[in-house]
Length: 293
Image 1 (cartoon, rainbow, N blue to C red):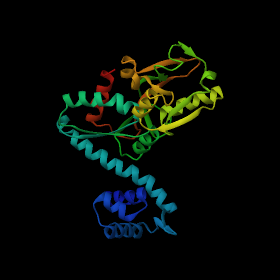
Image 2 (image 1 turned 120 degrees about the horizontal axis):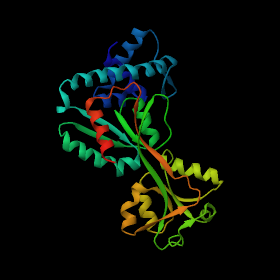
Image 3 (image 1 turned 180 degrees about the vertical axis):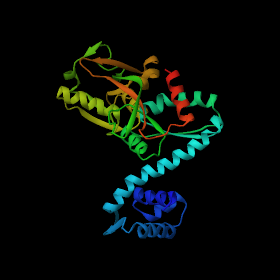
């Protein structure tokens, strides 16, 4: 067994499909099948089983998946540690970010970091909070930026910034001239909501449960820009991060309205695996985050 065997096994476990795993690894399907067969023979157990047309992990496969993720992560960390001997002249960072920090905060930090360290390659993927954490656990991201409270036991948290949600309405809306509205005033409004898995939506739903309110949804999207356009068009109202609406408020395209009793604050966090070796490049990036407040 070597690290390549485990990488092939993990690709098949992710896709539960030998052909797609081969495409990811640039291997033919027969090559993948042979490597998995040899791995099973070496371990003396079946790692996959066929249930009808569906490929599934066996109990042994599930155990190997958990351990293989740690082993492959350790190999990757070792390679990065060797690269560090060459300083910050080369290297790469894989960063995950949930939608709000990924769109409105992280790009500026990446630009500042690249000005200082132009030879470090930085890749950023924007996913919902739950997906970012999941991919960090799987070691597909070095670290991530999230605004939620879905943190599992394998994740280390670095507090970063405080965000605040606001109710946003069109400038000609009946709430626009009011300084404050009550939760019960929202009942007859049409709402544009963020998608399930979004930290913004999770905080909204926490407030709705506390108020025992059920609001009418007319649209759901994972794109804050689409939410803002829908509100401007008069389709409905929405809860959005203040980081997301600064430009629209200054241009008077939207109006932010205070809601009595709204628990609107949340902590934006930098997260990584607890056993993850943070390279000098990763540490330098996180330091840049602290300076860009």
